[in-house]
Amino acid sequence: MSLAFNISPLFDPTLAAQLQRKIDGKTKPPGALGRLERLALQVGLIQQTLEPALRQPVMLVFAGDHGVTTAGVSPFPQEVTRQMVLNFLAGGAGINVFARQSGMAVRVIDAGVNADFGVLENLIAAKIAHGTRNFLEESAMTREQCEAAIAKGADIARREIARGSNVLGFGEMGIGNTSSAAILTSKLCGVPLEQCVGRGAGLSDAGLEKKRALLAAAIARHPDVHAPLDVLATFGGFEIAMMAGAMLAAAERRAVLLIDGFITTSALLVAACLYPAIKDYCIFAHESGEPGHAKQLAWLGASPLLSLEMRLGEGTGAALVYPLAQAAVNFLNEMASFESAGVSGAAA
Image (cartoon, one colour):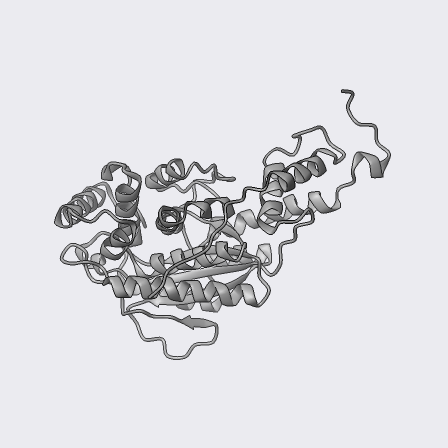
């Protein structure tokens, strides 16, 4: 199975200079719109135009179960993953609320939930298996399963882009997936595990210590796993692998990627290890309350737009930040220039 992607770095000095002149020529002091100006420049470079436009924004929510939950790494039972998928489809979850507010469509993907949904309207059936295996005992997935998940995620993103979307948000649901994200962060970023493990869905102090010990034991059980795809297959989840594939395909098609919190960024870590240029296409929404997220962002050299102490996942931070991306594009296209408005510019 080929997992090759062609992701071009955003290196176009001529276009960058033209965009910067357009930004600086608006009726405002230079830099007065702060990071919105850098966002406008980034989106213009992604789309290779002086008049960027965001069309048909879509939030992709990938769901999958994790075998490690049987060891007690989460205060919630695995059944909650299935229940939350149904909540997403009914429009009642946090991501549904924020996506509606931001004018984003929501797509729910069964990447590997330990349940049989049958045919449900608006559920994208992409199940690799009924949850991963317990990585305390064996690899979470085979290499073939990992690659199949990446490939399916890529196909899902390509279909959305073919329908007209050029901005994709990424979210997830999977009881136990903060455990996978913590190990991926530690292994791929070279950060001590204890700095990457948080309370997840609300562990007590005792639960947190148990989680740390279990994850340390899991790493010790697989001492020779270092390459990004091997780390993903050994410790990851189907929803994380599928997200990574969707991100890579979206960047290949020059879409804007809205990156949510800890779990979503763990998928991006894998993608960025394989194709570092993907970072150019990412808008980092917020810094999660999970401690490992700050380590991920530092390794990626990323500065998120929001810091709201959120840690819900689902893509909620990405949905909240989409209006800021819209604002950046809108001021670039609609705000008058000094020349068109007849306003005097600053003296040299």
